[in-house]
Amino acid sequence: MDGHVTGTVPTGTAARALALARAEADAILAALVPQGDVHASIHDARKAIRRLRALLQLVEPRLGLAGADRILQRTGDSLSALRDAHATIGTAERLARDDGRWEAVIVRLAQRRDALLAAALVQDPGFERRRRWVQRALARIEAAPWHRLKAGDLRRGLERGQQRVDKARRRARRDPHPDALHRWRRRVRKLRMQVEAVGGIKPGLVSGRDRGRHAGRAGELHALSDRLGRRQDLEVLYALLDGMDGLEDREPLLARIREAGARLDRSLAG
Image (tube, rainbow, N blue to C red; front, top):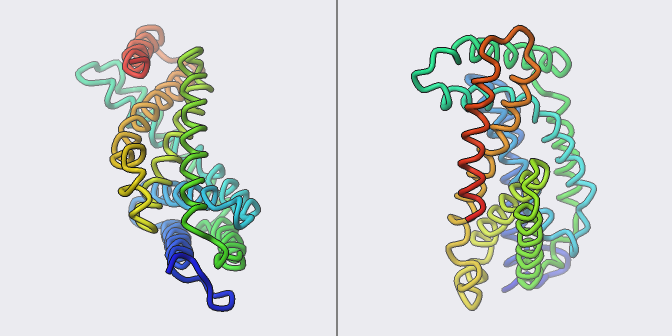
């Protein structure tokens, strides 16, 4: 069956979509229990939030889940500074290679990251408040009329996502401003997650008659999203170093970031 109903109990496509939403919510809640590598847990939580939001936006016109999506957006945004603080260290380490001028910068970035995490855990011990936000979003998800969802809703959602990616790509290539590149990245990443989600919910939609448009798109979108993500990480690192007090060798370090960014820009313009 394809999302048809017995009463209001979702079946087929609808049941599989709801099961995926529940699984992603559980993944967020599990990641928001700090233990071991807290920075890895924060990264996992943000990825699961993005996957769940991508799914909700895919089905939003049919199910009306904008409220749950806003709660998840707030949760993800509240973790973004922590993620960026950790990611900039990796970006600096990749740029450093055998250049010893980066060592002091990396130490300062690590100190900043650890201070931000400590402050966040003082304000929200064990991320309990954030877990409550996710639980509220999950309650709204559970209450949605999933039995109404049809395979055609997923197909139309993918088409909307592709149109948004195409529009963002055109804008970014006309004017490769950081904001435009970041918008392009977000839309590419969202579509990639939606393609992957639909592949698990209704494989025929991405491997059947739409093969020419969607089959193999997840890998292609993943590679593009990664390049755009590296570009965004360079922008974040540049801003941090540009505003860092008492930084020696500021100009050559900033020039190294600009050089790496220019290489990525050329690859993205191809």
